[in-house]
Image 1 (cartoon, protein in one colour):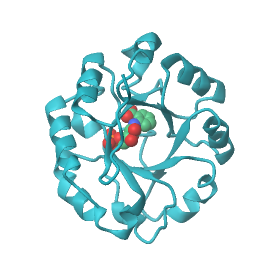
Image 2 (cartoon, helix red, strand yellow):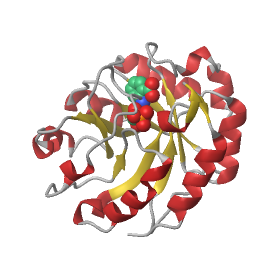
Image 3 (cartoon, protein in one colour):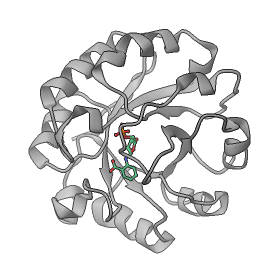
Image 4 (spheres, rainbow, N blue to C red):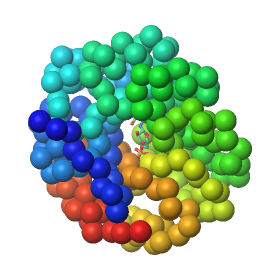
Length: 223
Ligand SMILES: O=C(O)c1ccccc1N[C@@H]1O[C@H](COP(=O)(O)O)[C@@H](O)[C@H]1O
């Protein structure tokens, strides 16, 4: 079976922090383009607390994104092979050199945890030539999955030359704001929205009714 096709004219959806095989299958059947699994042992969504590599490897009907935080290159590469990942999201303090090394093996999404007042242009500049995509999340305590809302206006006036994921505390009620954002210049390279903790009943367990409703609403949006 083929993994999910991405959306050419609208935007894609990534559901991150998946830990339940039945929910992963439900996502794939719904048509959701990307599902993320957290390979960070300190996260309550650490995927190996729930699933074995051989079970993850067997999933072949949705794009599988592995989320890592300051892992070694050996760990990342071993996991790519063990779980047959399609993409990795580097969500820690990885250097451009590290991203470049991993990009020799697989598509790399570099995540930036951004605070108010950050110079986004400066933060991304050394990564543009060594990554495939970017992801923008909110800075906060810990590395991610905090549910803290990202201020999308931080991206205005920044020319982002890579397709990017918008992330950080996105919830169902954001659909109109996403629509408005999609009409702006900043959304030219917007590739996907990334949802996580705001769609959970507990860490790693998604409210699938809420997820499907959000996905269906996003499919109706166009730039
Ligand atoms: O979800 C986690 O536990 C996590 C841990 C470490 C790094 C990243 C993590 N998740 C990523 O965080 C963003 C935002 O999530 P939220 O919407 O604020 O809950 C999301 O992209 C996940 O990929």
